[in-house]
Amino acid sequence: MGSKQLVRPPRLALGSRIALVAPAGPLLEGDDLARAEALCRALDYEPVRGPHAGGHYGYFSGTDDERLADLNDAFRDPAIDAVWCVRGGYGVTRILDGIDFEALARKPRAVIGYSDITALLAGVTRRAGLVAFHAPSARTEMPAFSRQHFSAVLTSASPAGMLEPLPPRPDVLVPHENRIVTIRGGTAEGPLAGGNLTLLQCLIGSAYFPDLDGALLFLEDVNEDLYRIDRMLAHLRMIGALARLRGVLVGRFTGLRRQMSDGAMGVDDVLAHYLRPLGVPAAYNLPIGHIDAQWTMPLGVRARFDADAGSVELLEPAVC
Image 1 (cartoon, one colour):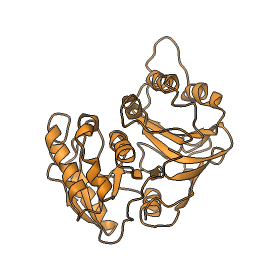
Image 2 (cartoon, helix red, strand yellow):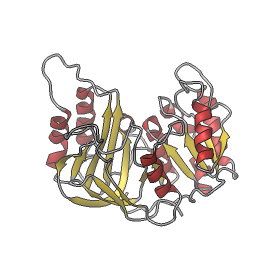
Image 3 (cartoon, helix red, strand yellow):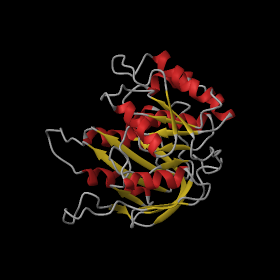
Image 4 (cartoon, one colour):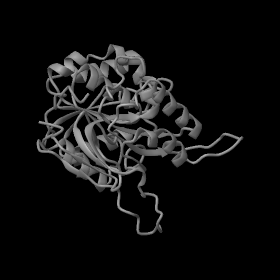
């Protein structure tokens, strides 16, 4: 990744037309889509609802053909300025091979989302050669912390600068829920890569698995058992994916479970087992993942990571 410069999509401006799509799971609340449209308007963008974004087909927002049509229509429509996924869930991997990444490459625009959308973002970087954005989904309320970082990354053709860690909550004594856990200290530079750990493992062996050579890898996940986190990290290590990293940024493992009956380990122990031997800066509990207040992480953009401070400095623009 370090040797190939990705194309930057145009920045979001006032009045940008944002396609709202749900390429994976269905919306779980009746007002999710209305909330996504309201968020777009609050940011001074014009929402364009995908025809099947509010649909429901089993545990998807629509059939594979319907979800694929919404994505491809957005990528092929010259009047669409960005594509923002309303939620994650499951389903992108079923339609990856049918996505028209060539259309996206012909007219670059920002593609935004996280969780299961990691698979789509990986396709955007690998197949379309564009910077993609691991960021809050469109249905979120987006607190001030998230909105600040979202706007800094997506609306300015200048480097967004420093992404600071979450401030401590005044009602929680140290150690608090936002405390950064430094696994190995130091600073490192490289292009950002990563996303949801389960989806990254799912992409191993495919044309969509990210190039991690010299990268700053960031990870997050939700509702996984600790032993499964352990197993996925072991898989990444076995294929050599961790061998040439410059640094590792671990976000939140929200809803983490510990169901093994024959002993217990802490998440810090598991992460240290895999990450400390790499000899690169690594930290845990960064504002990335299934939390309200999170960073917008531009995939492919060069950054400087400080594992002691828990901060990331974006060294180049994510948009043009």
